[in-house]
Length: 274
Image 1: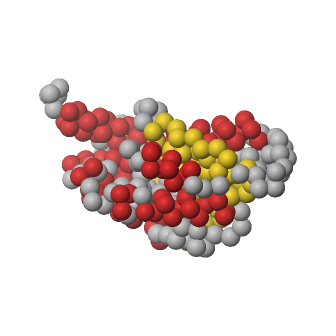
Image 2: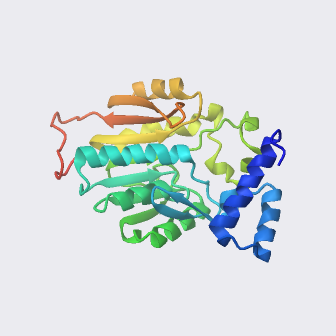
Image 3: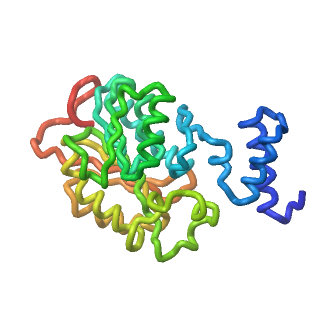
């Protein structure tokens, strides 16, 4: 291996991972066909066909957006917060908007066995992927799948809203890896003007769908933290935190809705907000 060629090193790692994960070390004809897919730039996760996400196995055969480690990081922090503040048996209503493969909502369903999840997306491929993954991870009875343009088809309020919206600026596609542009769904990548148009709509509408003391967790792009904090400051949130990912980069917002009734938040095992 030429150590001065990072791309060659990455491809060697991908070949090793593919052989171990999909073919259990056996170099079959199908393995060599998959190597050609990798050589053509197809993402490794699509070639393998699935990805692990917080103890769930997420099927990617519909080619939804591939869940990233950064998303897994903050989703795990949300689960820890809910278990710590409400208890592992809390009865919660959770909305996963822009659900894509369904990974976040399904991970929440698996970690919180008494939670009811609504997973919503506008794309047909995402709707099919969510249904498949909820079934394969044994939580289809607690994951309602809704086709929705943001909140258009959403009804009721939620204790928790989680979201990984499109946040890439379409004026700067050069910031996206070539394999991502070529293979992953653009509707899940590009977020309108400055990458913030969809996020602005989402944040503005979200308080109307949050229960008092409910929490919102949303991923955003590198360098967008000041704009996000400004948008959130104008909304009825009692607390707003801009949090880093595992690499120390501001990556997600955690906000708590104001309690408009002036009541205390519910403790572990009680119904109500977080």
